[in-house]
Structures are given as structure tokens and as C-alpha cells.
Length: 262
Image 1 (tube, rainbow, N blue to C red):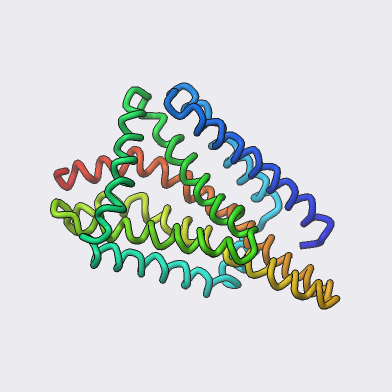
Image 2: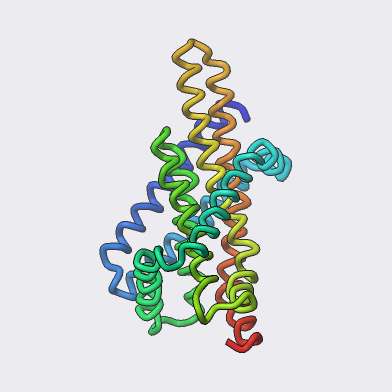
């Protein structure tokens, strides 16, 4: 991508992210008000779709495939961290119970809070939450040199540990876990893995570009930042995956759970 095109695109992405986090803060302040929750999540979903439209305008399918191939080892690293977290969550169930149980209680509380809302709002809420987490991971933390790795790896590990923990619950089974996760997880999990690989690529590219710039190699520094922007454009794939996953989780996953007898 030419620098004249890359700079405006980068600024537009930053603007969209700023608006996204502003609405997040707004919703967090009034989270007990369901009307505010509905408006805030709807705004965030709209912003996510606008971000997708923006990226899709500047992105081709060939560029997405090239970005995936260029970052394939970072994708593998992300997957390995999540799997490691799952193994730890399963094997150390008793030790993690005191830490993970409050997270599950928090999720239950959030579900209770939204019981009065129309079930047709759930896809919006899920999509809003997932795009907020993935964009914060991929674009915000990815832009913090070195320190950004800590929350990225932490999110991967904790989410993996949560799945492992759930798999170890006395009332859990392979069938129940697959029925509850597989329908939407087949789209959602790759999207989150891609977003963490984006974070790592942006972080690495910023560090490399800074080093090259200090050594008066501006051409290679610009090339590295081009790789970072190329990775960011993977959100043209991540956002649609999360959008479809939100509807699958809201309408199809409950049917699958009912079908298996839950």
C-alpha cells in the first residue's frame, strides 16, 4: 500500500477506535440502565460495521490471504497460548476455582440484567462485546510497544483457561461443551486468534520500525509499518466473522443445546 493511502487509513482507524472506546466508557458509567445499555451496544455495533466498511473499501481478498500467510507463525503462537491456558484450566481446576468462579458469577449477573430486553437484542450485545474485546486486543494493545504483549497473552491464556475450567465442571460433558461452544465458536475462536496475531504483528513492527528509524533506515521503517497496517486490515475478515458468530450464538446455539437435551 502506498504511504499516501496508508496514512489517512491509519488515522481513520484511530478515529473509529477512539469513538468505540468513548461509547464503551459511556456504557460502563450507566451499565445498570438497560436503555443506555441498548443504545451503547447498538452504537458500538454500528461503529464496528463502519470500521469493517472502511477496511473493506481499502482491502482485497488477496491482501487478506497475504496477511494471514505473513503472520501464520504468530497465529500458531496465539493458538498455542490459548491451548496451554485450556490445559492449565482443566488440570488445575481446584486451584483456579476461587479466581474463575467470580468471572462466571459476573457473566450470570450480566445475563440477569438483560432479561427484560428483547431476545433479538442479544446478537447486538454479543457482537458489540466481541468486537470491543477483539479491537482492544488487536489494535489498542498491539500499539503499545512491549507492554502490549502482556494483556494480549493474558487474554488468550485466561480465555483458554476458562474453557478448560468449564470442561472440568462436574455437570459438564464433551457433548455439552461442543453443543454450547462449537456452533458459534467455529467462527468466534478464529476471529479472536486472528486479532491477537494482529496485536503481535503491530507490536513487533512498531519495535522494528523504531529501531530502523533510529539507525537512519527510513525505507525499511516504512516497510515495517506497512506490515503493521496490512495486519490491521485483517479486521476486514475478523468483524464479519464476529457478526455472523453473534447471530449463531443467539439463535442456533440455544437450539443445538435444546437438541442435545440441555
